[in-house]
Each structure stands twice: as structure tokens, then as C-alpha cells.
Image (cartoon, rainbow, N blue to C red; front, side, top):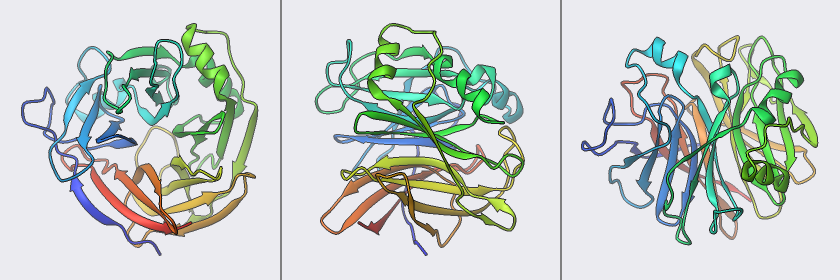
Length: 304
């Protein structure tokens, strides 16, 4: 089993314009330079934290407006951003950009947002909202219940991670040529774009509840390391208790080669990998499914 070390809660500086003093539903993670970027699926902002130390973060606005404070109303209106990736330079983004991706599980969850960064990974442009229905609508026909929970850039491909549930256990990795996606984003494309491949995976189950993908990170050899949880829910909308969680590896051939459970079932929703000589250092963020509980930042190591 894998043991996680908690590094800190994802607390927000008290001067930030936030309904609370922390992120509670962390769902995606990227490290660029000295900054740790975290999206939360119930926010209109990006959390920006220092990689080192335990300092509080601040919020960077992604979408205009405000979300309701009550959990039920907030859930109905949230953009449900579930994946955060770094894409290489294209169009006006000379040093690349962060791309946040909505789950696509409801009509109002098909948006994304682009944020440009500089050579050191610091944000240098306002957020630009993008319509991602051109890739998400075709996937709604592929899956019984669309729920994109993670994304990763592997070489020249963008891969989206579809997460299943108890009623529709349909986990998959959906592949696209990265250039096709970046060209579409550059030209505000609305013409539907289908995937180049769809690879389905059975990650097993615990107490009758299947494991589903929550995020992934690329390794230099073409493998990906992914996180998955077994959440006791029968659809893409309702939350449920987390019965188990794990970290696995899918190799460059698309074969599941490892999947190990966490000692404690933290609901891991974001993962970042840094490769060492013999190990891979992982940072992970959690979603507590409770606005009063801060999301946590954790670390662990796995063998290469």
C-alpha cells in the first residue's frame, strides 16, 4: 500500500475575494517554476500557491460572476473544472498556457479557460474562456454518462480521462492529436472534433464500487501515472463516500501495468509527477466534498 504525507492545507490569504479561507474541492494540479496551480470544481478562480513552504495561496479569477453560497445551488451553477494541464506554446501564448477543462457532465460544464504564462511559469495574461463543446459533445455519444475528470499531455497527444461510476462503469482514456486541439482553440472552432482513439480500462472495485480515474501526469518514457478513487455514487452528479483510492501506471503501449491502493482513502483528484533517478516524486491534492474542510496537499514516492 502507498502512504501519503500531508504537506499542508490549501489555505487562501485572508485578503482574497473568496467565500471561505481555503479551497475545499481541489480537482486539478500543475507545478510551474515556483508556483503550484490548483483548480477547484466549485470555484470561479484558480488557486496559486508557493511550491515550497507552507505559505497561504491567493486566487486568480477565471470566470466573471459569483456562485451561490449554499452547496446545492452552487453545485447546479458551478463550471465543474476537473482537469488542469500545461500546453506548449501556440498562437498568442509564447511560453505556453494553463488549460482548465470542465467535466462535460452537464450543459453548463463544457467550458474551459486558458491562462498564459511566462518563461518562469508565472501568469502573465488574463483568463480567456473557451467553449469546449467541440470535443465534449462528441464524447457524450461515446459514453453513457460523460464525466471528464483528468487530462494529460503525452508527447504530441492530449489525453482526457473519462471516469465511470457504479451505474455506468466506463473508464477510458480518450486521445487527440495535440495540434488539432491547439488549432481549434486558436481559431475558436465549434465544429465537432472526434478522438483519434478511445482506450477503456477496468481498474477493479472495492465493496462493489468501481475505481474511476481522477487525474494523470506524464512521465518522460511515455508512461502515465494516474490517480483513481472508488466513490460510492451511481451518477456523475451526486457525491458519495470514498471507499478506496489508488495510484497506478499505464505504459506507453496503453497497458495497465500497476495499480496500488492508498493506505487511507483520501479522495485524490489532482496529481503532479517529478522524476528522479530511481523514483517518481508525486504531489497530490484532495477533494473533501465538504466546503468547511480544506483541500489538502500530499506527497509520496513510487518506484520508476
